[in-house]
Amino acid sequence: MDIGELRRQIDSGKLKLSGSYSCIESGKLINNVGEAFEYEINHGWDILSANSCDRQWGSFNIRLSEYIKKQNYSDEELNAVLSSIQLEHIHWDWFKKSVCYTADGYEWFYIFADSKPQGACLIYHPKDSIIDSGDIFYIEFLAVAPWNIDNPIAEREFKRIGSLIIKCVLNFAVNTLKLKPGFSLHSLPQSKGFYEKLGMENYPERDKDGLAYFEISRAKSAELLGAA
Image (tube, rainbow, N blue to C red; front, side):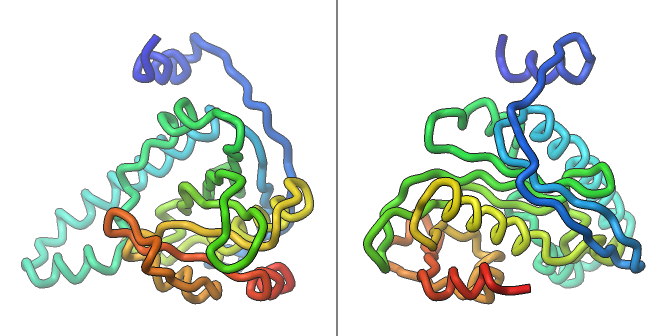
């Protein structure tokens, strides 16, 4: 059975699958109109959560695309709108990634609130650090739901989802995986500012395929874990 057929079987309900995940953090999020929602961050492989990301995020992105088309923007206006929206990971297929990244060393994380996937993260460990001795983890993929990113349809539903899931993953890596405090990644161009605000630094000698390599030190990791 190929990936497309597997997805169709799950969507139709003919194939029942369950993931091997557990909740490792919970709390409350406040949305853009002041409403409180319980959130959970789940750790573990779960193809149904991956499929939910594709379906719900994809549906929002279709609405966004249709909205932009109806505005009859000039070329200059359209370029300005598109540059303000983070579209670099819009093509990511979380279902396919869930099928492909199952080997030892890969760890999956999803954050849910309001019955929707608000963010997803895949890491790999161990990875060597360019800053300190000892092993850290590497963020393979990180994304938040498109309704949590600046867009012309509506105000962001929830803020700080990206930093929330990173802090949770860092805590898990240090206390459960017994890795040294720290992590690294290769950043998409539009995300570089976000990682710099977290305290990560670029090390150009490890840049790859046009993507900047970022890593965070032990000291900055401790600050991140201690942040409210």
